[in-house]
Amino acid sequence: MDVVRRAIEAFSRKDAGAFAELTAPDFEWKVGLAAVEGEVFFGREGVDTYFERLRGAWSEFLFVVEEYRDGGDTVVALGNLRGFGRGGGVPVESPVGTVFDLRGGRIWRMRSYLDHDEAIVIADLQE
Image (cartoon, rainbow, N blue to C red; front, side, top):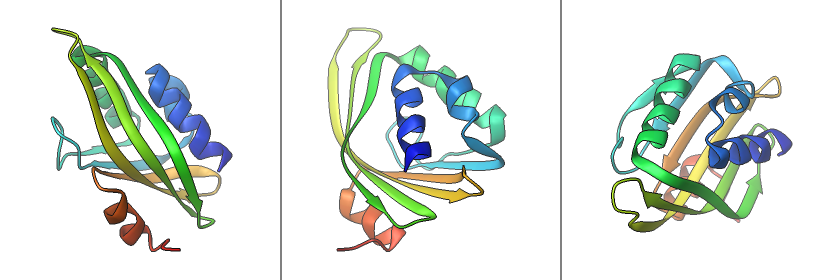
């Protein structure tokens, strides 16, 4: 859980270096969110690419977690993405559920969805 919390904090700070330190060398990030929907980012290069896009499109972009579900090597974070577009400062808020798969104390895969229930089912962490 600590690794996931630190990753989300780094994400919200747009700190690619701190985020990447928490990932495995074969890290895989599947994004089911608008603007990069369906894309998969791999390794450190993928982390840098994703964060570069965030910085270019958003003046602020936060993952506000409302609930964690801990399944040991799989953790689900449920909450909302909140941000302000860089161009006109338009506020955006959307639900997000992210599944973090861990191995050896590092995140080796992340999968994000705009639907909490989808993330919970994918992670097989239903109550």
